Image (tube, rainbow, N blue to C red; front, side, top):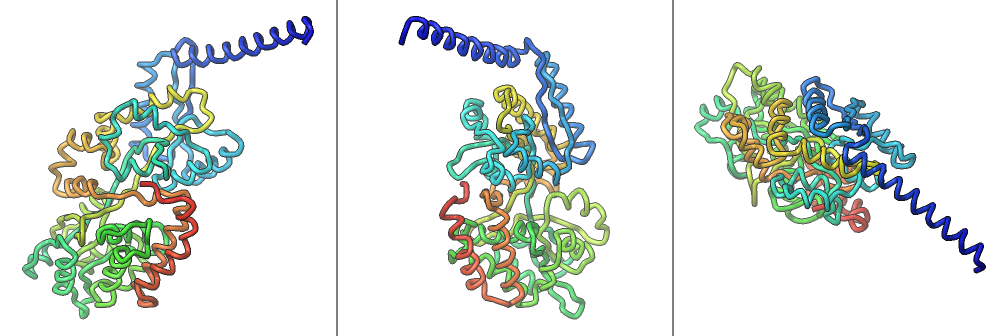
Length: 422
């Protein structure tokens, strides 16, 4: 290389270095607060209460971080999911985004969310989270892409007037549940011992999953004897007339309405029913208990997560905001205001409502046993297999063994390629 060419190369290298240094300095200054920064946060919380708390957290963060604004924007759930799909290609994503917990894995696989495992590990508070909600933020390798924001789970609501009249206690095991159903089912009055939702969509899957896990099974192996036993138990309740076969058409709201009308002595019920439906029941006393166990207690979670979106220029700052709204006290405050369950076990201890309330204390205990749906990038396909298999068994179209084995074979290539996150 001649002297002139060498000089030109050195100038080019210095120029590139200077530009890179300027870019890094700009980002460092923004992180340090010397230049105004706006982080976009998109969510689909429709209620003023929930969105109001989120806005409060954003304003509080701005007060402690001069020059930083968290722009909180409501986007309808459908539109937000569409934007994630488009943004995965175009790069037009918010800095922080909200997602339904069972959907997060699929968007992680599309590259929508950043891996923030190292940052959250350094934060040092991951061990405070219930395993179910936290697992919904992970990929198959255990890497973390966000934090759970709120949660809920399922338990068993009982018509205590019916149970007391029959001289029975709230069931704690499958055997006890079946025995109570046998005593309280009254075909002449079209009263069933038990009700649930087994509708052919995510609601049906949501209510079937706890029975699979209670038997010792999992969605990782739907053809296992344990998973089959879980569906078989539910199907047998219908075959024996203890549960209406109409549950294959019932939403969770329909199932609870049957219970509220006195047409079912017990119902698989979520936390939202406590606030929305239980207060309207005046004709009988309602008590909750954990979903009865076979090999173990089990439940399933709902709720939303927040993740840091790919391509953000301010990853560290976004993670700091996420960690700030996820402290034990802030999670407790949020959950109390929104009527949700906290995702952290230490947050549940900060308010009496989750440990001493007649109803919610049961759900708080149930969070110890609640699992996530999946997590898996192709969860809708897996979910369809679960509710389709459940329906076939409940209606007597196939045995639980046949329906679950066939379903498991259909999704075997998917799970072989990408295992369910643990």
